[in-house]
Length: 173
Image: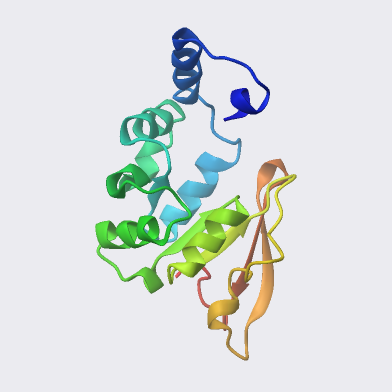
């Protein structure tokens, strides 16, 4: 799409090179430690992506992150792309839970909005340059309790995880 927007024609070799590079992207520096801490906290982690299953598995293996996830799920399984609600519902089914028990953590406002519209919980990872869309309901406001308080979880590399911590409970559950 980017090439087409700039009126650039890609050869088959260009396409293969781009797809090959997608499989070898490095993780964000804080990702391995952050995922490990979530696991140590007793959370079940699954990856959900718009990439094909093969690309998703290759990306996470190359990045050394696959070991943190119980499941690697692709939107391709339902022939839809995020933020379509069916993608998030499929993830919940595959994880053996109801959509309301699933919490998506993402750095894209459209992904957070899609999960919330599908009945899931969500948290926004505020990476530099990424902001929540003011036209969508912010994550955490779906189940507000009177004792809710806002917390910011900081990660190395300038990332920030904003969410609502309800009554002192684990915000990821």
